[in-house]
Amino acid sequence: MFIDEREISVRAGSGGNGIVAWHREKFVPFGGPSGGDGGDGGDVVFLADEQLTTFGDMEQMRRVRAEDGERGLGGRKSGRRGEGRLLRLPAGTSVYDAATGELLVDLSTPGTEWVAARGGRGGRGNARFATATDQRPTRCEPGEPGQERTLRLELRLLADVGLVGLPNAGKSTMLSRLTKATPRVADYPFTTLEPYLGLVDLADARRFVLADLPGLIAGAHAGKGLGDRFLRHIERTRVLLHLVDVSPAEGRDPVEAYRTVRRELEAYGQGLDGRPEVVAATKVDALPEGRERDRVLSRLAKAADTGVIPVSAVTGAGLKDLLVAVVRALDSAQPPPQVPQRLPAAPDGTP
Image (cartoon, rainbow, N blue to C red; front, top):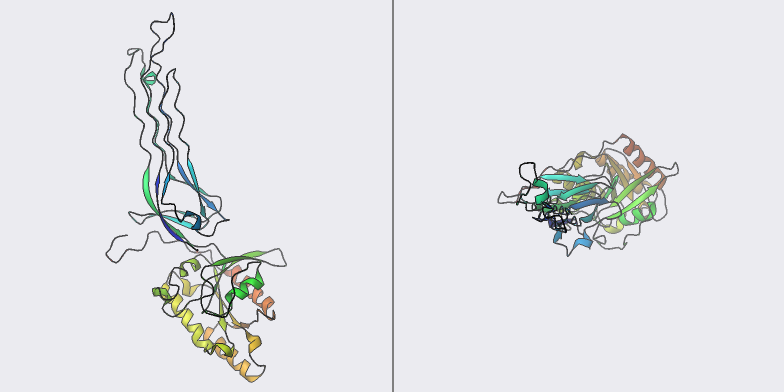
């Protein structure tokens, strides 16, 4: 199951208490204070892991707790520090404060660590309070409580190029031809129920990450079909690879299919309608050669206003030209935009 949203409660460990203790040793009647400090509480740390692509491993995880520090010991010995918790999250995770909706950190760089909850400081034992004028202090400090809060996690996949198009446009087949990914392929709508990532290796040692996203339908931006949740994963892509099925088998008008997806991108916002786009006419092997094929491609090219590359993932026709066009678009594309700084407000006005 693909899970890209999660609310989680994190609590760092509390610091251990300092203690009041006295040095006891034969022939040393006035040994003085020897109460040790409490150990610091453990931290809860998030780590961006590029090997993860979903929150699926966290499905049953609602609370993350780090260990409390131990109380101090006699003989000026400090208590043991509480063991921290390291939680691995998919690279591309945005962490929001669930109460305020404020963006706290964007874990978009693999290997980045962020302290989600900081452990409390251990309290000082009475040995810390000894002075020249107070050589037998009887006070110590309690440990500080660890930080605790509820966080909202949102995943936006890290990909250079996002495949978009209506269901059955050939996105999964295209991904399998251009990369080593093995998405499910079938001849019915919504075969792809979760995004897939694949790495495209080019002859000049260049590479880019390609994401296959579930097919959009009219009204997807408002939650219809597979909803707008998958549109979020296009936000980080620098280039859109728009696949339009031109085969007569589907009975769809390619121009209207193209415009339907463009309307959804525009309605969703986040600058998707202005993202660089490469348009590919898929399944051209199903079109008869001649005037009909030229007419279909000409109409689509006019609607796209960016040119159209005819391709066939089955025969491999046009795939080299397609990759050239994608690389050219990547070279001129801007860095991906920043993620939203706040969570969208609920209908009642709360975050």
